[in-house]
Length: 87
Image: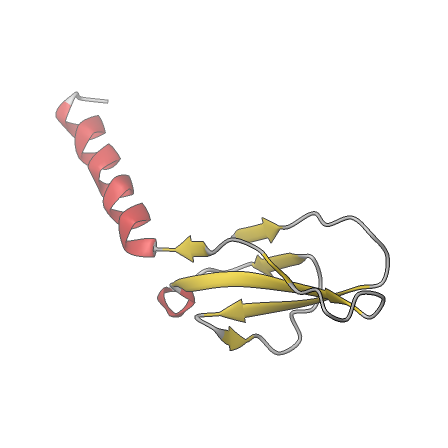
């Protein structure tokens, strides 16, 4: 599972998540949760925060990059190490 939480203070914030620069429809909270991560989820994610009280201010989170290939490679390397050392 993937769970990204971006804490932002203040009231009446408007949140919008983006995947590779494209709006993720329905993802409008300070958290992005993908319960069953798959290769189609490999992307850069970013949160945009606005507030009607400050219409000229737009906040952007840093980019969160999901790369399953790295995770899979790391996992396989650990399995190889485990097997090479007889557990």
